Length: 280
Image 1: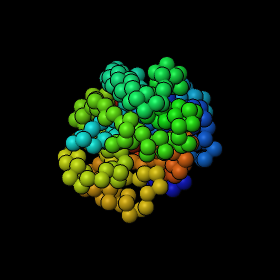
Image 2: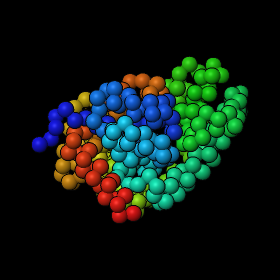
Image 3: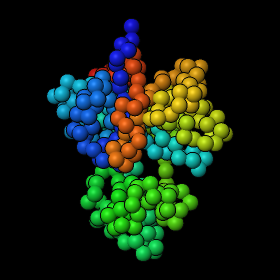
Image 4: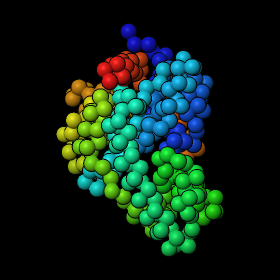
C-alpha cells in the first residue's frame, strides 16, 4: 500500500545551474520540510552529484539522480527531465558538454547585445558567478548588481525574454536526440511542465515522441490543469511525475515540496536507477 505521508519532490535546482542554493542547502531544506525523497534536476548538468550523492548517503536521505535538458521543437522551448541514469554516464556527460559549448556561445551573443545597449558585463564576470551551467538568470543577477533592473523577472521582461532587445535563441538540441541521449544512458525521459506549452499543435505532436513519462504535477498549478495530463499519461502507460521546480529566490513562489509524488512512483524510479548503476 502506498504511504500517504511519503512526499518526494522530483524537480529542483541548485547553484550548479540557475538555482540559488547549494546542494547541501537544498538537501537539508528537504529534510527540514520532512520530504521523503528528492531529485536535483539542474539544467543541462549533473555537476552537483559528486557533492550531493555522498552527502545524501551521509544524511540517510534518498536522492534520485536527475537532470533537466533543454531542447527545441518547432521553434518552441521544450524541457525534458531525465531520471534513473548514473551521473557518471559518459553519454550524459558528453551531452552536457555540448550544452555547455552551446550556452557559452549564446551568452557571448547576449553580452554583445547588452553592450550595444550600454550595459557592459564581461564574460569573466559571468563565469565567476557560476562555473557550471551558466545562463540568462546569471546575466540577470549581474544586471541587478549594475542596478539596470531590480529583479530577475524585470531583466527578462525588458531585455532577456524572447522578442526582447538582448534575446538570443541559441542553437538548441532537438527533442529526438535529447530523448535518445537519456535512453542511451539507461534513463527515463519525462516531458517537463507540459502545462506551460501554449500551442496545441505542438503538444499534439510531442505526444508522438517516445517519452516514458510526463510531469503532470507541477509547482502551484490548479488540480484541473494537472488532471488533463494525468489522464493523458494513464492512457499511454506513462510514468506520472511531479515537482516544485524550486530555484530558491530566483523563483520565490516555487516552494520546495510544493508539488511531489508518492512512494510508489519514487520507488519505481529509484529502483530503475539502482538497476542502471548495477548493470553499468
